[in-house]
Length: 416
Image (cartoon, rainbow, N blue to C red):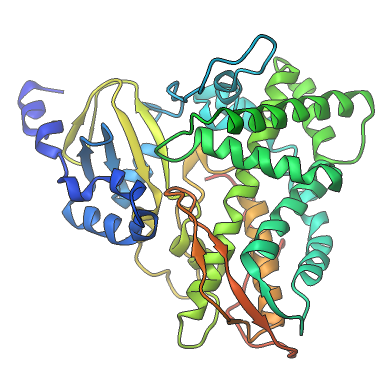
């Protein structure tokens, strides 16, 4: 890069956003509910901004978000996760656990581990789950059942029980798994990782449980995703039990934490539409964007969106801002959204999440007209928003017309 060209690029001072557009504002008051307004204002100002209040570049343009996610000069590994207090002797170091996860791997290491993780999420295994998932949806959302809390029961329990079926987790262990999943998300997600030692203990408990699952699967193989994962890791070589356990924790946390928000906010969006209909699944994924941003670190000087990003700079990739700027899909084609990321880092569980969404959307259509019957409440998670309470009414009906959704036959199992 020539010195003249470098001089033309904006540095941090020139690219700084005003205080009112800092994403840190999402962590205060009712900030989690104003992301759409904030991201829209950022996108209007330009595709790349320096946020001095969180000391990170904000990437919100569709072209720039896509570029960052596909560029090896932006590393997924962030070493700044907070431990809370140092773990006692013999306790699990959660920072070390996070470092083993697929989400924090780059390059060849990422691709190699992703192939192993995908053994759990193979098209064969996902397709085999569909009939059972439809039975579960009918059980959780029975027609004519009257008032219920969609967020507190259906949206929370559906993905958790699907994960249990996929991985072979006994129902009696699900409360602990849920608590550990919530805890791990508080530690490695969002803008303010928790220092609460009780939260760290719950996450360690989940990791230790996952480690026992790995060892049990090796000693007594079964027809479940955990056994497939262990077998794939052993066949690939170079992965120990701690690697497999860390990525089981990742699968549990990422698989459970995003879907409740997607389901609850999609239903709330449908209530606001004139026809009360759910959007098609791809459109709903773009509209909600269950995980609103991901982090990266610059590994070498790079130009992006007219700005100069230096080695070591932190980057926040605003997936939701890019999705909310997408043009409408072409007639007859699904919307190509960025809710699952892009390129080699596209979410390994995307096909599973799409099928879960399709199954639940079909069930909501079958029991409609579903109506809101009270005031919903929103959590305070700025990255993984979800309604924590969503009162609804389910009258006895024969179903309503809705937008077409996808089945396992339509899901793209490719990896963009």
